[in-house]
Image 1: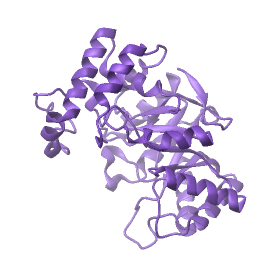
Image 2 (image 1 turned 60 degrees about the horizontal axis):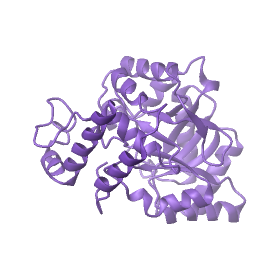
Image 3 (image 1 turned 120 degrees about the horizontal axis):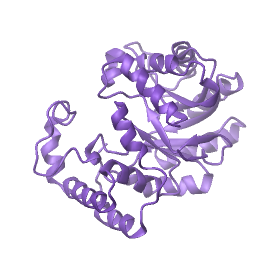
Length: 325
């Protein structure tokens, strides 16, 4: 495993993080084994959220944090753990958003489910147009000052939203965000247009989620072929599969497979290596549901993607407005 600073912050993280969305994992025991294996393999960065649960089912809200809490027993001080707040956790009027009320309530629930006294990077899961940003920034600052989080960050923000959060924190003398988390992959390159500039200018850490475009970049799915039975693109995303694969995404996947064959690597390893070759990206978040999938992704570190092949992937995947996430 390779490790690097999270942007200009002093904390070091593994270049591959494990995400606990568990989109295809229904079994909590297997999920716990996955986390424990990831730690044993050298992954120190574990990404969670208060809404995550097995099969990414909102009926299972909070269960990923519980699984993570069990898996990190005796190892907590060697790990960097995230969780998130913003998304709906119930039907009540205050069960969502970034109000002081919701943030301070949800951090307590997260800590209780994980059975820990702090989160290392507490992330807002989205932008809240209904709450004054000053209120949100002050609440997050209080979370850090109380010792319940070490750092704060922002997910799914545009560059201007992240920049405004930095400006408000500076104006208030409050804890600033140290990083961002957004989708980024060969099938979703929108981050490059504005966010990369902000990352470079402000020294932010950057966590790339959906680096394999919900499995499309693993090589399991091929142009002109049906989605394998039981997979997410054969079930929950079946309605979008044909249009996705018959468009430019299918051509990009075929190019990725060609490059992977040339290198003797798997498509997933090449897709991750391409992502990690960008200096703006601190880590890629693996959404692996099984140990086998995780081990495949781990083969993306320890080698460099040849420049000519990186440029080939750059050219083929540079499709305006392509956004598979």
